[in-house]
Length: 247
Image 1 (tube, rainbow, N blue to C red):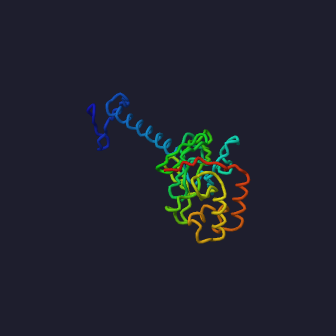
Image 2: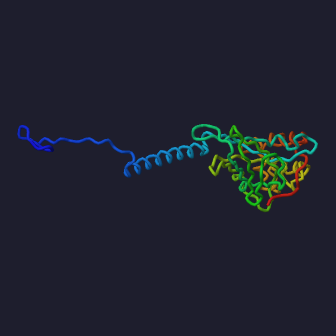
Image 3: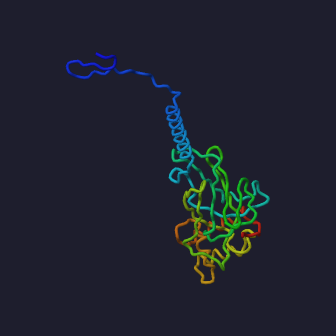
C-alpha cells in the first residue's frame, strides 16, 4: 500500500490530512471584513429606524386656537392657545431634538409676523411654525394669529393645520381663532360683530368666519360658540396682537 492510497477489501481508502484555517489568509480576511460591515450596517439601520417618528405613538392636539397676547400678563401670550406635541418612535420611545412643524398654509387663517412664544420659529412664506422637542420628546406652542384675509378665504372644510415631525406626517388639527377680522389688533367690537354674524348666519358675514368661530368643533355655529368668544374677550388675555401679518 502506498503512502497516500491503498486498497482495503477492494475499496480505495484515502488518508485525509487536516490543516487549521489561517485567519490571516486573504480570503478569510475579506470574508471577516464583509461580515463586520454587514453587522455594522444592520446596527446602523436599526438605530436609524428607531429614530423615525411614529404617528400612531405620537400625540398631537385635536384643535389649535390662534390667539393674541396681553403685555401686562406674565407670560404675555394667551394661555388659551397653548398646546403640546409629543413625538415618539416606532418603539414607543420619546424622541428628543426633533423639529416639529405646524403648517397653517391651508388653515384659512393669518399668522402674526411676530411670534413671541419661547422656542418657536416662523417661516412666513411657508406659513409654518416650528419647535424642537425636549428630552421627553415634547414641544409646546402658542401661535399668535387670527382670522383670514376675506378676499382669499378658504372653504369651511379646510380649516385644519398639518403637523409633521422630522418630515413625517403626524396628523391634522382643527383650527380656530378669536381675533376674527381686522389687522390682528386684538379682540374688539369688530370681532364680536363678526362672531354674532356667523352664529346668526348673516349673509354679509365673511365666509371663513364660520369655520374659525366653531370653538367647540361640532360642525355647527351656535350660541355656545358666541359664549366661548365672550369668555375669551372678558379674560383680556388676547387684547393685543402684533398687527403685522404674514406673508
